[in-house]
Image (tube, rainbow, N blue to C red; front, side):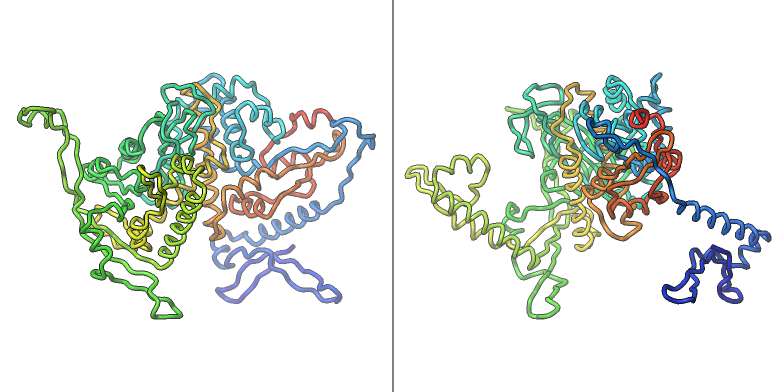
Amino acid sequence: MYLAKSGTGKNMYYVFREDVRIKGTDKKKHLVIERIGRVDELKAKDPDIESKLRLEAKRRTVEKKNKFQPITVTYDNQIVEESKHCLKTLYFGHNHIFKIWSDMKLTNFFNKKANKKNAKFIERCIYGLVMHRLTEPMSVWSTIKDLDTYAGIESIGSDVYYQSFDVLYDMKEEIINYLNGFMKENTSRVGPMAYYDVTTHSFESVRQGELRMFGFSKNHKNNEVQVVMGLLIDNNGIPISFDIFPGNTMDQKTLQTAVEDLKKKYQLSKIVVIADRGLNGKDNLVYLVNEGHDFVIAYTLKKSPIDIQEYALSEDGWCNHVYDANDKSVLTWKEKIIPYKLTAKRELSEEEIKAFPVTRGRRKKYVEVEIETNLHITWSLKRKEKDYADRARVIKGVLDLIENPSKINQSIKRGKNQYMKIDIDTNKIELDIEKIKRHAQFDGYYAIVTNQLNYRTNEVTELYKGLWKIEESFRVMKTDFKASPVYLWKDEHVIGHFVMCYMALSIIRYTQFLYKEKFDETISAEKIMTAWRKAKIAILGNYPNIYLSPMELNEDYFRLQQCLNISPLLKYMKVNEFKKFTNLDIREHPALQSL
């Protein structure tokens, strides 16, 4: 490698070049390894820049030659009779997680904030728990036993790991605020906007507590106690906050707590809440409007007033018609906006209740209010085809039940009798044709209601589309992170467990954000975790002549390495070189001590 100049005049640049022989000839070609910058600009800043760059070129040449020096590894070629005679390996894909952990400065954060004499070990335990949740989720006890298979993880007593859950519980708000500060500075977070939804997490137990209660299970685990989680995420799918509620809490009761929490964290006077139709209890909407916030929430046309249904289905008021590109006679999309006064009940304050005249019967506790909203209605051919296909599957199931009456009781318990009509007197079972026709007229239609009257339909639609990110976040926590069933029983430890899962979700979402920024592509949490979980190093040779060689690194690992700005590895590394490249120190690891 050597320093050269490329171009002419003001467009002359310093470059590092190499001469490479063209295969099968005596000719050489010049390869530009790196373009450094314009000659005039660099010399203006540092007159001695040229000599410094020549020295840098020599240094890189020597470094490159050393990398390709042959290595010698010695072995005792003994008969393999025990596991200790086999080649030893360690997992090390968590060096990516450690890089993110370091970028977030979480070590310093916990060391300062943990407020424990053993803060250093608490921080190492929290890192170990979060890291293992991101690679191979297990119970706490299994995680502790498995950490010895990871490079750079020191052995710590199990009691400290359980203490860590107390720390996570105590520091829940501080951790959330700290991570929000980092995400605000390092991502394209758009505020004030938040997606909100709730889910349930079960316990393999029937033992109740203050949080662990029986309730409606979204996982159909009605025979187990559960907790309810409310989660707020931003436009990138990165979590903003979460809360844990008793397992018997209704979805609608959690929204106001989440919004109040968001207001405090960001000192916001106005928030846009995007939520599923399950959270649009009328009192929630009144609360949001009274507090000066906006909402964007799905609206069910099938359950709307008759006049709204008639106008929605009529040919009046449609605009922005879109037709098939190949066949202009085929309509694929249309939209309309209906001004709509949403009637809701607002709970009266104690002072207001006392102000009403005393009458016979119960005191008045609610008053009806009207909310000025716009109802954005869209129709699409694609949705019409999907709605038709979904209903056809349900009808097929009902017909199967009619043919097999013994299955009816079970189907009723699971709510699969939507289009089934049963005559109680005669026990006759038949399809509910009227209901099928009534539902069929809504095929292709979708409605979203918002109190922000300036939004256009495409804006509202795009906002609501983002709600899939929170649904995916719940799937990641339940499926990829195996956040439930929960194997902890103390309420403080249960909340600490979900703080740990929240941190893991923040790291995986931040990684996905960096990946999208780098490659303009998306990558699933499952792929990221697989890349981190599979990466191993083989320990070669006998002490002190030991080399480490990477194994099972897939393409995702290398792409993640790029977007996290991590240096490439060598095929064979000494222990100190491995530490330099990965920041993982294995000098004291038992796997090396036995060599």
